[in-house]
Amino acid sequence: MMKRWCIILSLLLSIMACNKTPSDHHAEQSPYASSTSHDNPHFDLPDIQQNGELIVLTLYGPESYFEFRGENFGLQYMIVQQYAQSIGTSIRVEVSRNQQDLVSKLLNGEGDIIAYSIHMEDSLTTLLNYVGGKEMTTFLDSLSRQRKDPSLRPKEHSAWAVRQDAPLLATSLSTWMTAHQTAFFDYTTIRVKSSGGQTYTPRRSVSSPILNAARGEISIYDNIFKQYAIQCGWDWRLMAAQAYQESTFDPQAVSHMGAMGLMQLMPGTARDVGVSQAEVFNPQSNVRGATRLINQLNTHYSFITDANERINFILAAYNAGPGHVDDARALAQKNGKNPNVWLGNVDAFVLRMSSPDFYNQSEVKHGYFRGSETYDYVNSIRTRWNEYKKKITH
Image (cartoon, rainbow, N blue to C red):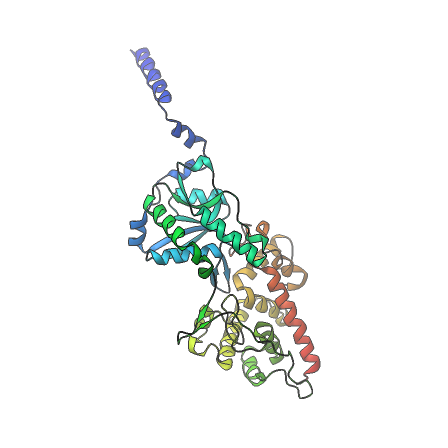
């Protein structure tokens, strides 16, 4: 009797193996096979709209997504943000380290859409809907030629992606991208609106770095710098050097990233430090807000006991945000350098933070940023401060 059951069991196993579909075999071989579990909900468009949040998967990079002074930027991020508004949702960004991680998270329901131009793989067409390849390629190619920036050149045979089990989302996104392709340039142009509704585009009027050395005047705002420098324990000439670096003493300056005023406060930062939209272009209000930010950063880096050394980190964090500077510190420590010393230590890793080889390392929590700008920012302010101290002695 036992022998008969063994024979029957053997036959059943053979039949099950023969009846296994090609897709079952493909799933076993796919590196994404484990990602098809249903531990996370798989939402389609109505579910996303009801939930009120579109979860966006992306990678760090200048053309995709990055943080700057506490705010989010990136060409593809700004486009998907517009799409989310069109379907009545907010967005939440989840950053991955590579394409395989992006696809795995999407298939596992950890995100709704990959808003990054990934390479289209034939082996994934049964799992993914590729969307917007033509539209994104045309846009990035035009932008690359317009800005003469080869880093923006589109990747060949690439597109955004949505799961196959979200056909309504895929159709909605595809239709929207086709209809709005010509507006992509507009969507990715940063504009700043005042409380009165006026729109400011990037501008800056350049003035001399020293108004009158013989009279000891750096700028017409010296009294404001002297008033607020006391509140953060700085030499007023250092604050003046920073203001010149930020705006060349133009209180109406607007940067291409949307920073405003004499000390170039970002809109979100201005709100955080108590500077309203109505007063952000007022020199005194702007410097007051900058002083509060400097004091916050001074507290953040209070563990750096050398006050002069701490200035380097405060300046760097004012420019790039403390998260990015702390990432560079973590890499410096990992590589045997002193994370509390700028020159020849942390600055060397700040310079590398625009390279994927560095911003994709596990110690880095805030991803890509233009580290060369931060490096130059600190050095330029330091150099100008030294010049001011030589020429303005009081």
